[in-house]
Image 1 (cartoon, rainbow, N blue to C red):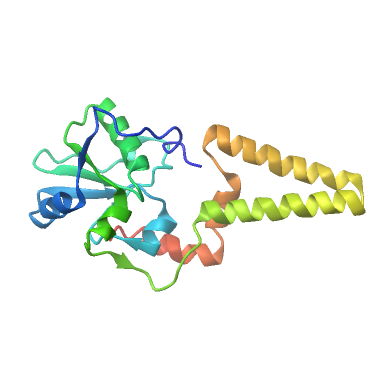
Image 2 (cartoon, helix red, strand yellow):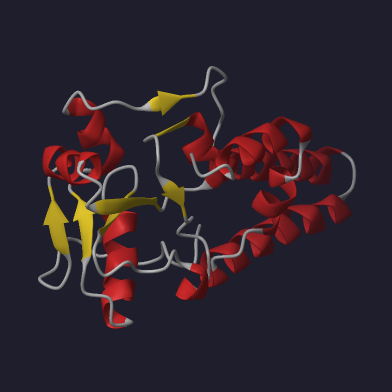
Length: 194
């Protein structure tokens, strides 16, 4: 779970939304920059060509792409919720020329607009972390029931890690999984900002 992603707001009066087709027109006319706020592995699997990656899990907006007074900053995520939250944060920080693409990448694809996809499909890291945590809890519980009760400490440790991730937005298991060989390719693809 991400730090910026937590408590994502629904549409509010301070964040301006734009349809995918209007956003595409602005991008084709070089009147906007597109910032993808999804995570690295999501971006690697599929993205809009020319988008700049700024994952919503980034804890600070200090590294957000610089504002161009002559261009609109368009924000995109999978469905629009994470982008709306980042948009609220940017507006609170004084940026006024920010618009969220309604419906996110799902609506963009539904409108028949082009998307660049990677041939290899990735399981998002957060899902990998959930799978690993579930397997570990099940294994520790079975070992505790059939081998030695001390194994239940392992299940408690995993549960504490999940609680910590939920409270802080920092998932250590996801960080470890992102360094695994099968995820390094996704990271390399995602950091190209293409």
